[in-house]
Image (cartoon, rainbow, N blue to C red; front, side):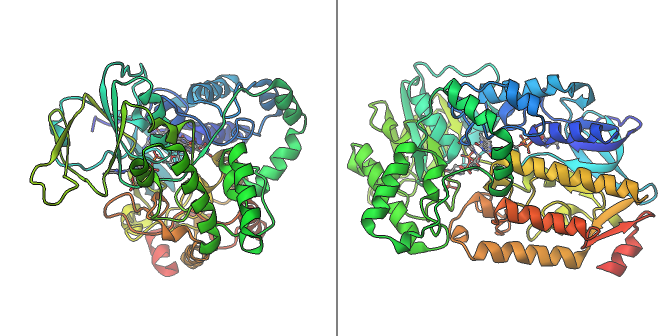
Length: 554
Ligand code: FAD
Ligand code: NAP
């Protein structure tokens, strides 16, 4: 680590300059606070700056996946497509940074490595990889739920002499796959977007699939100006509904169990034709009733078999190991159709696992157990669409120490523990945006981010008005919240999938269902009630909390 400079002091330090960090900065300024954002990347944008892979696109409609805090901004920005592609979302975030003059308070190319609560001063001391140091009364983790990309642990991968890419750290200059033999590992949302795009360019594309996934067509297209105008005319009404419901879909009030197979089929067909995540809201019991879920899952498997011409490939592409929607549903543009192209091959890793990455490709075990040779697949490039250390990864990547030098990593060794998903006991004045224990990745994340920023800013205002130095979650309130979040998940089908929602994609990560499955409106009320009751379940102190106090209250 380079020599550290003398820390510069701020009221609030914010880690990350994506949607969350930028909004937090803007609102903190509005409160008259001095604020500094520390960002590892060279520019604003967060995931939309990192994920420049071909095909990267939002699956929440553009008019909804945007900030609501400024009416002028929402009226003046014109979206070109129903679902915006990565470059357009990045331009939007850059526009926000410029329009609100945010860049002057952001330090780029600076990764926070450590954050320590100093019991003598009551401040957070942050250390970075550039030697820059900062101290602040409040520290806000806007470091992202999906910002720590994971490369697969494959034997021999370091020996591969071709290029290796991760979708979440895509080269800014782009990649030309023309004439190349490309392998893609991973068939989650990123894989399902990048595969059709690479297939159009590469000489050969080999997709390595460990688990098949459900995907719904986006039917993306240009956003008609009149549709945009009509929506904008009613923006306040739409935003108010989004604050209750997250993304606005056609939510059904009927259960699949109540209606005939024909009614189900008609509903699924009509929603398939409209496309997008709206599909999974066809009935209101799909995420809680296995038999109902089977009906929608069967419908999608039928679609896959109808689209994919090779029956063996179609079968391998049919997900059978999890209920539909219990892994993040994917939305695609021509994904299943891609397997009808002559230059695309699917390798089902459940039948033929990768035994070795060689210097010039991938070796897969032979499907025939009696055959004594493995098969070598020669590749020029390997694209890893292998996901993220989600929800907790970015926070735990930082060496965070709270009262008494307690390490957050140790505290969360058996899974994340938060109160309201916003704070964790023993770490006063440390706020987390869209962290574990909040709806986070289960809703339109911009809606979740705005809610968290509002709550944090109201909380800081309250502390200041009351002359309070710190806020810290109590352990009993945190324990009750963790139990509440677990209970909520256990009433759904979500725990049935080995998903990143419960850390199953990271070897050794504790299996805990991390997001809170309640509707965001319910969650907002819960957070509001806590605030209205004088921050019930939190300890508010005029002085600086010490390790002695921690012992007394734990
Ligand atoms: P991020 O955008 O992840 O920003 C966090 C920032 O923190 C990053 O710039 C990172 O570099 C920085 N950072 C992290 N750690 C440190 C550190 N230690 N020091 C300094 N800086 C640090 N959500 C939806 O609701 N709808 C979608 O359609 C959707 N599509 C997505 C598509 C992709 C490809 C991905 C990866 C995610 C998608 N998401 C989507 C989820 C997305 O994470 C959120 O919508 C939103 O962009 C998150 O914003 P953020 O600011 O919280 O986090
Ligand atoms: P992901 O959903 O975690 O998918 C990772 C894929 O890689 C899975 O298919 C996984 O298989 C596979 N994989 C991981 N390690 C592997 C290994 N060692 N060998 C073989 N296969 C391996 O990650 P993601 O696709 O990047 O998506 C993450 C989240 O980002 C999404 O769920 C979504 O929230 C967001 N996102 C959204 C969009 C969008 O459309 N708006 C686009 C991209 C991302 P298993 O399933 O078997 O683990």
